[in-house]
Length: 200
Image 1 (cartoon, rainbow, N blue to C red):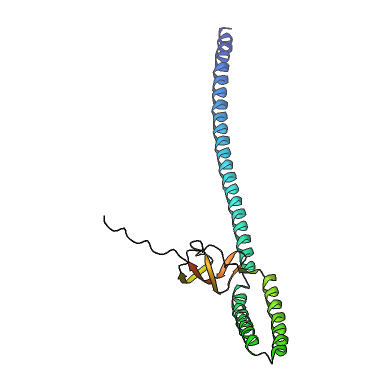
Image 2: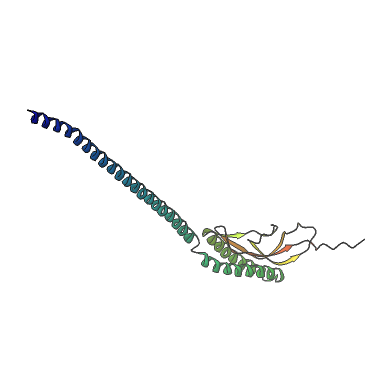
């Protein structure tokens, strides 16, 4: 009887100890799982950040590439148009020479007039075609000198005109989509150099 009582008592003492060990193991396992969850969440956040950064980089690249392509398309005809400008120069030169000949040769006045009209038509047609491709003549005469648009070939000193004003255009300048592809060659009004004051 005593043995039976002792056995029951021993069993009762073992039960709480086993429960405590089991709880400790479960708590330890729970800590491990929580640590693993934290680690996985950190990895997930790192991957998400990396993916978002890569996505932003790709979008930036696409936008820059699109801008580059737009610029390339816009200025694809630049060299062709630049070469055609010299053809336009030849027309301008011919027209000005024919106009001066017309004044001196009165007998051939009618012929000169017809020739001039034909050349004017070709000149206007060429200018209009070039303008359709974005080529714009830079307005210079009477404007303030701008080194981004004009090239000063000579200077004059005329007190009746404002300083840095363009008084003569020797060769037309042109821009394409806002970019100067040939500056206008001009004569600029510059003030006379100030004379040093004599010592009194």
